Amino acid sequence: MPFTVLLVCTGNTCRSAMAEGILRSLIPEERRGDVAVRSAGTAGLVGSPATEHARSVCLEHGVDIDAHRSSALTRELLGRCDLVLAMTRAHGEQVVAIAPESARRTHLLSEFADGSDVEVPDPMGAPREEYESTFGTLDGYLRKGLPFMMKLAGEEE
Image (cartoon, rainbow, N blue to C red; front, side, top):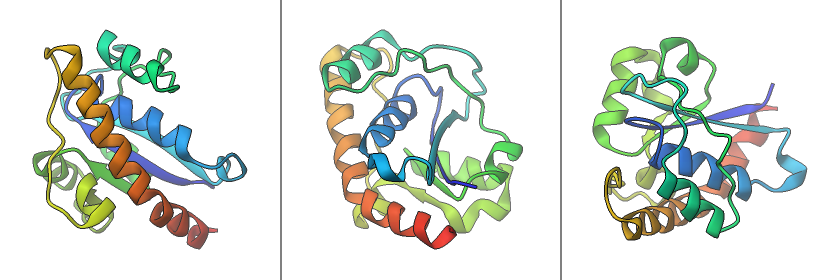
């Protein structure tokens, strides 16, 4: 059973969709069977594609999220995840409200990555430059947190 990382934002069409694609691209090929990456949104949207700007900015960086479709954050999904990374404190609070047993494995993305307390702003409806900034923020935090994720995934075996 792979170690499962869930990335959470509001609609699952911008931040967490981008983060899912970025994280998948960062996992070393030889470890891809050990780690599963998912994303979901607190707004309950199901089946929506990532926004055009999210897709184009990701593709520009070699990350293809064209096949992404939004998923709703559910108790069942949370029960299958080993690590939950939220874009904002409110997202983390919503995770815990849905599944209190997820509290110990739920973290703000920046906190998990480098111990900071920085929320990832929502670029929804903003110009493309905001999506580029969001990509850079997500990429930076995910690169910092990747070694710890890989260590946790190894401990799950």
